[in-house]
Length: 299
Image (cartoon, rainbow, N blue to C red; front, side):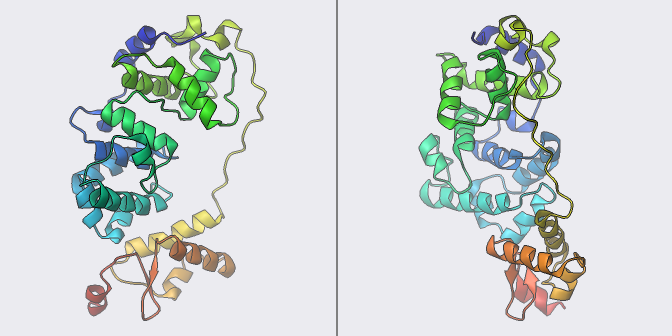
């Protein structure tokens, strides 16, 4: 079994979501920003933050010159704020080593801070039209079903997954749009729990559908717990820092998580280690790069 490019692309022409980072005038840098933000984060949550971000910092140079405290405030509630720090670091490398232009080569992209195998290929494909396999969870699921007849993709295997996706790519200029369409199909139709086979453009050639949609054998992954975790505590502490125009005292951080002193101290140490917070000379705490001289004078 394989994937008919004409059937998939015809469906994509009708069903493609109008996402702002897919617009014709969007730059490779702005696409890179979207890929950072979309890591483990739903599209709906990313949309307003991405729009505000690329309006305020439209280029790598603008982002590299920005105060890291401002970047973390703009990141807001997207979660995993370390991504904002890595994006800032990537902008600095692009300015310093690539003359302010996002590289179009997968290997060069993977050398940027915060850019892994998926993000590098996504930028090369969606920003520059390169014929490279782009594999996320949605693509792995579509390939598992349409090509291998399996309900579940199983554990990731980078070499195998890239080879599977590469084998499906059209040999012409449609390859980049085909990759986007494959991902969109997994996001909208060939979903994990409620696949809509009746409207799937690959239904007649899908190995899983033809086989009668056999049940998967992989155990269902338990939902990740958030309440009460160190991640939640770090988020509470970071909220205090983001909401203050001046450095805050330890007592101000204590009230953000009074239930467990040990956990709170562990979370604060993690923020400091990850570059998401700094300790001032007088023992207070602030976002990295915050103008402490100016803010201290205003206290």
